[in-house]
Amino acid sequence: MIRLLLLLAAITASPAFAEEPLRMLEIQAHPRAESIVEGEMVPVTVRGVYDGRITLEDLKILPGESFDWVQLDRDDWHEERIDGRTRIVVERHLAIYPKQSGFSRFGPAEHRLTFVGSDGKAETVVSHPLDLSVAPMPQGPPFHSPHGWRFAAAELRVTDELSTDPARLKDGETVTRSVTVTAVGALPAMLPPRPVISENWLIAFAAPVERRLELTPDGPVASVVWTWQFRPETGEPGVLPAVPIPFFNTVTRKVEAVEIPALPIGYASFAASQSAGMQLDAASTRGVILALVTGLGVGLAVLVSGHRPTAYALHRLWRHYSPLPGWRLRRAARAGDLLALRRAAEERSAECVGRPDVLSDLDRAIYGPPPQTFDARAFLRILRSQIRRGAAGK
Image 1: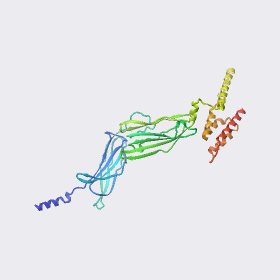
Image 2: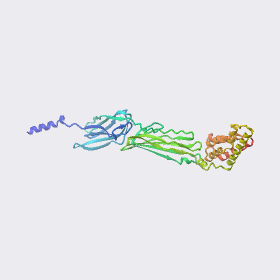
Image 3: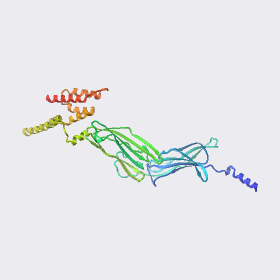
Image 4: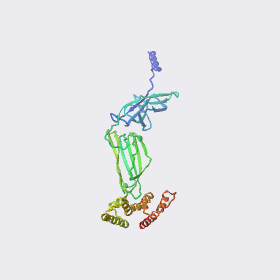
């Protein structure tokens, strides 16, 4: 009997009866909805379970064309008790994004390991790939997005920051607008391009686009920052229209949109002059009265003589006596805006005596090598003097 027991013990201890080492690697998907939409984040865990001590390891996701993906945190190595025995477990948490609808395959994963007692010989464990069925992006209502871009996110937020009140700018002042779009559960490359702003009444400068990525245990949070500088071209107020940003909400499972709000832009001085009924200084008031009297005189001459004045003559009268060119000159001079001053002075320079001289100093200040000093008030005095001399000689 003793011999029989010893024989059984020897047989069970032989290599043929030794327990196979545990080597298991799998990809587990944790979708948050029954159907997955193109571009929607799918949480994934790559999980390996082993029964030996590991000295070297290298875990890779084999490349593919069907998904974008990002690792959310460092690999988590820990021990777990499985079937009454302590096992070594590694978990890698990913967020994957299907690029197109239809049948899509992610992986497989490959884990190369060296165990204690293996004399430095490495083993390679390969998982099965993950197969997913992906639905196309829903069309939803037409939000008239200027770029036609659409993506998936659990939440979309827009913040709009302004350096000053854009509707009450000082003469020549520039307003800086910074719009931040934040998408929960998306990657930065999925966010739309910067809206194109082009208005004939507005000077706009766009700074480089900033894209950012924050990794959290629940998934990535992407953001994009668009920054512009705006300055009215003419001073007359205008409004930039609102810009909708449509997206597929992975929580409500609907196509929704957030909006960059409309933005009114204008100079406070123009608004004040309008609200005050275009209050004019004494010289401008005399000019308006003289223009009215001249207009009445021309009208009476037409009635008496039956002749009609030419459009050119009427244009000259209006250009000479209208208060608007003078208002533009004063505003540009106060703001120190030499380009605007040059445009306003060009309107009046045809009435000057010695026209080439009146703009030469201004041109040197604008286009000459720095440093350049320029006295805008002295320039206005010279310009007005030459306008008066031109009027007296006609």
